[in-house]
Image 1 (cartoon, rainbow, N blue to C red):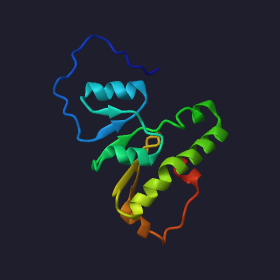
Image 2 (cartoon, rainbow, N blue to C red; image 1 turned 90 degrees about the vertical axis):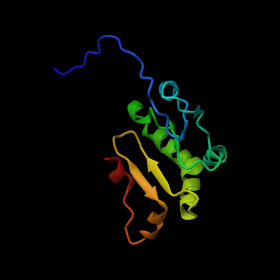
Image 3 (cartoon, one colour; image 1 turned 135 degrees about the vertical axis):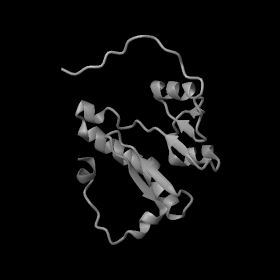
Image 4 (tube, one colour; image 1 turned 30 degrees about the vertical axis):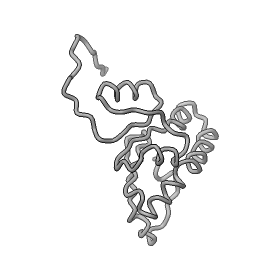
Length: 139
């Protein structure tokens, strides 16, 4: 049997250095941790263009989108597919356009499965690579 017992008190660290990026999230835990780290936090915008306008040329930013957070846990794959379609319309289409025009240089995707996907503006030149089905990326 494995386990972890958190015991005892402690003190909150005072020497946390805030990053230069602004965080956009609605999750209370994420927002609380950001405040603890003295990171500016705002609500997650509904559309990528709203985030881009609010960023005002900021070189780094983190947006936590929780649209699909509970779909896999609930086993509702129809809702998951619909949410992915919504994200494609509200976020990914604009980000792809910004990558093509070099307004956005790098996009990191953290889907919550322990993997990180990085897309750069130069990725558009990888036309010789064959597209792979979405299930390959989610396995």
